[in-house]
Length: 339
Image 1 (cartoon, rainbow, N blue to C red):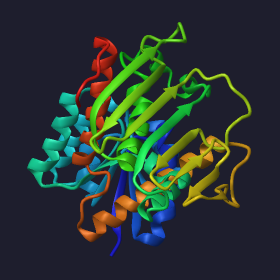
Image 2: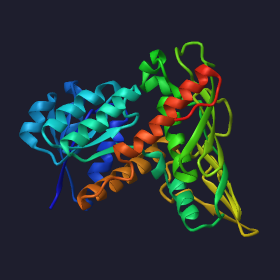
Image 3: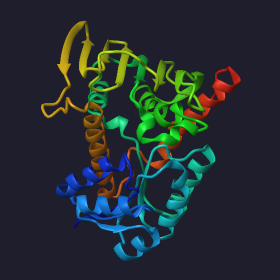
Image 4: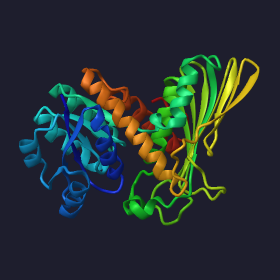
């Protein structure tokens, strides 16, 4: 039996969501409808996918009756859309960040809980190919218990061209980008006791922080450093921007920006080339986005079809969002903060 999918929001990043659901037809996904307040965007997405186009969510929910909606809109719209879908008992995936504020993020999770509806967050960095490989090695105890990590995403890609509203956000790089890396820190190193953060505004045109350096103390006693910036100026161009280095009791893992993995395990060094055969050298960022969005969607679809909570459930994502909030509090106070 197929799962009827509706995508809400047909903007810049939604193209990856639409492509993922089209590809997941083999897994039982039926992309039945797309919805956007901009008729041109909705019609274009419908023409590309064969789905029905809507500009009104209530009409779309009533006529299509989707099993699962994928909300790929700006974060300030998420709470209202979640409330509307929850009223109709529709299962939901919500793009990260879950909301602009902690209060709204909690309200989203509580709305789904009270309605008894499935809620997952589209946290796709976990499902980048390189990050999935790191997870496999940690699960296999390849380096023993991890006790130190550096997780970084430092890019100079013009993120403002497709998302010009970034110039005026009150909170920027931690909430938009750092949230991904903080999520990886939780996944790889465990939950967090304290957060210490310093921020910078290196681009004078931007209202909020565009660079952050965050030190995490994990409940295990491990430490990790999370770095994120939209103002890097380094060469050569990267195949993937996410850099990870983890040290453990028996070895270390390093995944560099060229998708090369170095594994030191029990005093032996090995290497893996993580660049796939179909890698898009003309647009590396698009390739990484396509792959991770597809894999995220596949994982969430699998959980929904099995009647299970997604690994990136709303409740799980609140733990990551709490680190975001602690980072902002620390940057303001100059002290380490507890999430």
